[in-house]
Image 1 (tube, one colour):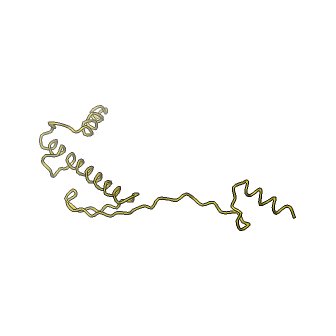
Image 2: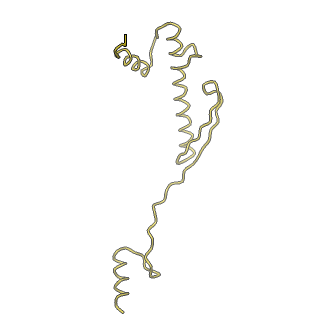
Image 3: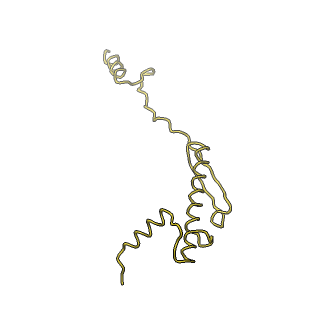
Length: 118
């Protein structure tokens, strides 16, 4: 019977594995293992906060936690009504700011260009 050897030869040419007479099932590429890291922080905006980061490594999760906390602190310095030094508290107290942050300034400019509804 010449069809079996011919079929095996065709399978070999097509890239199939034929050691046991059956074609091998292709496998998906390996997915890197992910790390889940949980953080509990006290004193964030006057309360506690829990963060969970999923990343490729514990080091990447630590970096993500530092970036998140730094961004929260940056926003607190701009938006806190409890901190007398924040831009928002200064605006509430004096009606003006000595120095506006770039983001607060661009928001103010956009709002001042809107037509009034008077």
